[in-house]
Picture (cartoon, rainbow, N blue to C red):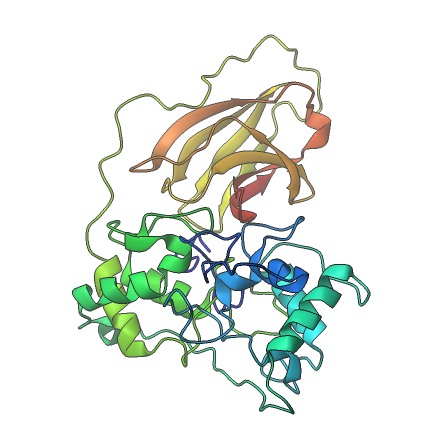
Length: 369
């Protein structure tokens, strides 16, 4: 779940999005491949070219029970084209609701009224809907239980529930996929799990209130009960991270490489502010092509996480430095050194981010001063 992790991800606190997705693979949405598909159905099941690894089918089945038996984070879409309102009445047009998913969960640009993708998807969903008007969809984003109210769950039942729901993004057993990070056997904090499940999603959402960050969709109360949440907490809080390895980091060792030190940013530092996954440290520009991070912390989980450089906090259009930072046991106060890729200069960044590449999430970042 979404995006359980402070990392990770949600909305429904991970919501509507698709969820976060698919251990079962995002391109097909995990709902079963038909013998042939219309253009609109293909759009429903496929990633958006300018988005992340989520699809409509990641979070939304067409009908329930779904063909693959999974319960997804968001409500099914079979009647969406005939609903009078969307997002608990906040929106009146289906295209607006689709654009909310695109921009808040899929990291894609909104679709204009004449966009062929929108027209095809609209036609497909209209073909699925029953005749006549349908009732508006209502759901409630609720705060998570806390303290003793999170205790008493059944871990065995939680594992079964996880594989029947959260595995659509996190994989069976929580091993992680290209939609969401590994969460099984990591001894996650119960309060953190509950927060991710109930309130994950962009805090600046124009249609949902009370979300606490992340790209994982939140699970509304009617999609997952508090009793079920307690079972999930009981399972996900079992186990714990392995001891950090004693081997030196795989990140390129520091070499202030003789490339000169004439750029105005040389000597500037940036404090990495955590958004998710315990990211922290102090980045410093050592010379014209070298950035060092001291006291680096990161829990080592996610989906292809790298150090990115970017301008004005825009890391989606930034560039990576060094290798994937995923590591069992995480990082605990080490010093890492990164060299700018060939053809890149310090003119192309004024900050750095520990960036989850497939889903486009900033785990922690800072601006050089």
